Length: 315
Length: 92
Image 1 (cartoon, rainbow over the protein chains, first blue to last red):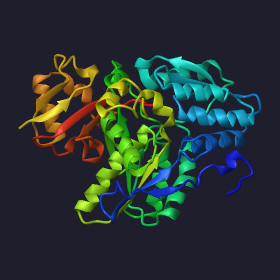
Image 2: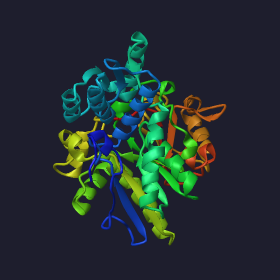
Image 3: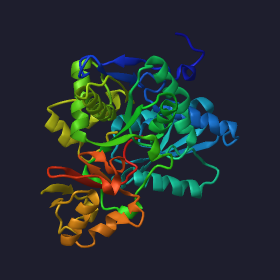
Image 4: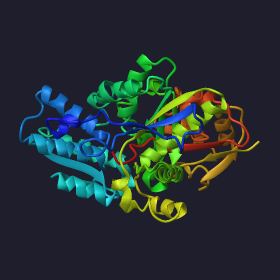
């Protein structure tokens, strides 16, 4: 396949069957490989759409500064687009995210402002919002609330899935900004009667939830509960176990949020198989495992890896 | 009847520091009322006039109760209920 430039190669990612993990011939899992995007994650779609939308609205011009609360993939995607378009990129991220992510961000020319680990991503959002208020000329695209994030999936991910898998019964993805599930979910629900839109939400160790007042929580502005049909909380142990199964049984080297999504996808497929119903479950592989190697998730026993993951953000 | 209820760090002051407590009930609402009898003040942190508080997430056997009937979600012996604050979460 040939494209005029790297950004033109965005999306149209492969959908690959998982015959060894699928519970039955009629209850099948299909992995959408989003690591096959320009910077290696699903976030390239949202980043490209958010920047394009801001440019259309006249918010960005060469030399503009982009600011974003992001501890990884969105920052990397935005940093790449910023580099190509001539913008300055500042990322606010919790200090306990993996080394690979920081290195990649800096490689793409992004500047990093660290927020305290104990506050997790809530704190990164808070710090970024304050910085945006202090610097009105900086542009915070704000992945948690920017409709162009979910629109990217409504316009690309959803249609790609339907075209590749017309018999789709379930779409399962990790829940973060909620952009993937909102956009893809809306599209699929409009076109496929009865389709199930299933969220796999990472469940972290106690440090991440911390002692923050339970009334000071955070729900992404993009989140519309009515688009989902179920939402599962997936422990790091289960996410890790499935991530390793993907590698051991299907040869697929995926990030840990993909393991979480596969855990929920398997639950859906098993439920369908038990009820004698056919299922074609599309599951989001948001990125490869490269950016999580330093977490220790891929070496030693599961118990050892789980212990190492405690206190880290893995999705 | 025993249902395990996992309590987040921020609410353990109501349970004398316990990470996990037991309760009974036929629905989530009943379970919360049952817990309130032994751990006074907990209910108000979880529920307000419109139902489950906005920044409180409750999972029944790892599934978000808002998709299982909310406060009317049926619960039974052997179930696990997990309470967590809503967070921006991870690395995106």
